[in-house]
Image (cartoon, rainbow, N blue to C red):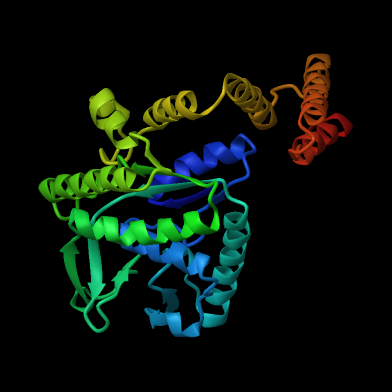
Length: 307
């Protein structure tokens, strides 16, 4: 699987990685708008790596308009090194990908006045550098439909899952946020209508309609709480995973919690029994699923037993 999009993508990516799915998450970092998501995907498909000409200097750091700020560094060489590594990993993943998940965050974009290009991240550059605009439904569709069609030609077996992030973008106000989300929801519906390999998962609707109480939001009252993400993840699991996969994920969750366990009395016989039981579980799961890597978990329990 390859996941691209807003910060909500990171929530699902983390859970899929914990479940030992073969997943590549956000090779450009968090990207919010459909134009930037489409362009990043197109460069991967066309094998067009980023170069020094894609970088610019601001406030003592070098940045890329196509990447999140965690790629920024004090030298262009360091930025390109990080970008190249992520780009290579994403190309490898996309070449064998069977499921692409795109999470759209906002239809509001910053467009550079000197070039007219939409940026993925403004890197806190001066406001005078940009024109702000709201993409309409047609522009959102046009940003994604052609590149998804190219992807399907290259990977006929691929399934594309679209979702709209439930995280609100309130900097321009609540009305503008609602209009933005509406454009994205309608664009997803049109993409689903046009492209038979595209489907929609209602993460946005689950948080706003099923979970209407503010207790399902984090302290900033914008991002979903852990409880809300768990709820949406459970809905996602029921929609897309078999009973066997859900049972496996339950075992993997228990194993991950066992790894995170910090004993109050590590020198007791009870803790020794706990370690032996968990090591036996790791060995059993490795035998059951030899294609998955349990080396880190095995090493953890073996080191604890030998400590």
